[in-house]
Amino acid sequence: MKNRAKFFSPNYREARKKFLKTAEQNNLKIETYTNPKTGYDGESLHTDVLWIGSRNAENILVTTSGTHGPEGHLGSAAQIAALSEGLYANLHSNMAVLVIHAINPWGFSWTRRCNEDGVDLFRNFIDFDMPVPENEIYDALVKYIVPKSDSLKDKLTAELGLAYSLLRFGKEKIRKEIPRGQYRYAYGPFFGGFEPTWSNKILRQIIREYLSNARMVMAIDYHTGIGEYGIGELIGFEHPEADEYQIARSCWGDSYVSVYSSDTVAYEIFGILPNAYKAELPNAQVVFGAYEFGTIDEKKVFKILRADHSIYKHEEVHAGKVIKIREQMQHAFNCDSDIWREKVLEQTINAEREALLYCIRQRCD
Image 1 (cartoon, rainbow, N blue to C red):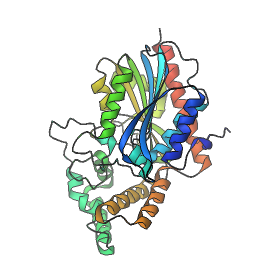
Image 2: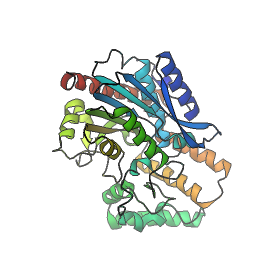
Image 3: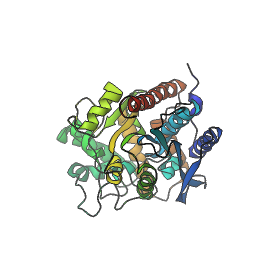
Image 4: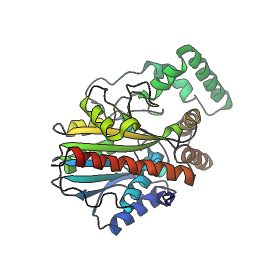
């Protein structure tokens, strides 16, 4: 077994240092976009981008990490592993790779799934000039999702309220509707924002600057937190009859599943990140997969996520509580197990290799 666990890092600062060092070792030039906020330890925050291959290439593999903060541990490790193992060496002249490291650096550093504005980036890509999507189930349950206060009484009331809601609405409906996204409660999980975030704008800028020549984009966005332990699922947002769905299935086979299928661990979402690619690249074919890897039990993940949002809603944040919830968030989204880490990186390397091979077979001429 290859020692791939070494590509993981304990925090954002070390992940970035490792990513920059790997780029330097491969003689790759980094372009950096600096976030206006500072990190948990007072460090500066950056989204770093590198390009491999001809700038005239029309077939591009794009990987992004850190969309959901602490999920960036896996994404960063996957990107570093691919670079370190020479996955992108000897690309076809009509192919290139764009690597976007830590698109949400604030969340990565602070170990929060949201960004500096409390926004879930993967739900931020809507047209804010239009009426925002409604989420009636979330409206009904928000007082239970994030308790009224940090008191034992209010936390117990919230748990009982959620338990009753499971009976009222059904487990499956709640599981799919709560994480779909909401645009009213800035303190709650899955908040899509009131306007485009810094990361939203930077991603769109990167897409315009680097992909304007593309006619085929294969994009992988790395995630953790739902699904079976250590098992990855490439989640797509296309209907099965769409050409992009057929391409993805041809490339990744059964590992790729649409949210419109009953076979996936995922659900339909408002304001999805691939909207940025489609809006900025109207003349390109975009095949997008959110590569989701299971960690701990989903119910435990949701409970920890609720606790994280509750702490930041109700009080001047106590250092001891922040340390505790950061440890829990790390555990929920970044398993501290070499077996898990080796297993997931084997899958990320294979998925990227399959995308490159598909482009060679079908697109490079």
